[in-house]
Length: 138
Image (cartoon, rainbow, N blue to C red; front, top):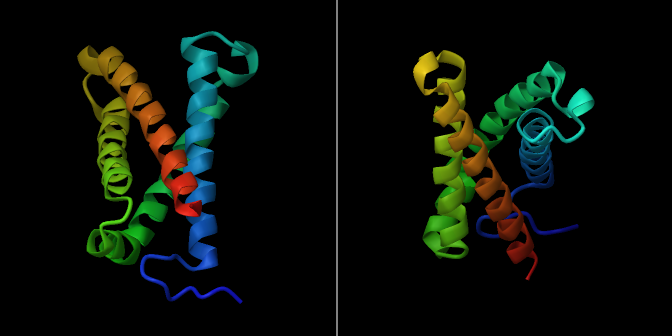
């Protein structure tokens, strides 16, 4: 059995929840971006149902973020390992939560700029999320 008491190491259930929710959110967001903004597979990926699943996955990702804040983040700050990628993810997730709220609740006048900002930050987050995970394996 693996030792889950190491500094910053998440229990298996939490790691799976974080990975599943973050990847689901990122992949549904990318699918909608490709279908809606770039018209790739628009008949499937540009549908409102993909956006709906992205929203549901985003709620799960927010819960996953909340689950890592008390322990994983604290341990990471203490150890100073992967500090850049971890804090970058936290900043990008905060920006994604704010821009997502603006897309839903914000004024129509800024919607186009917020859409562009949201997907650019989302792609940057996804890249750093993958690097953070790959770097963890080394």
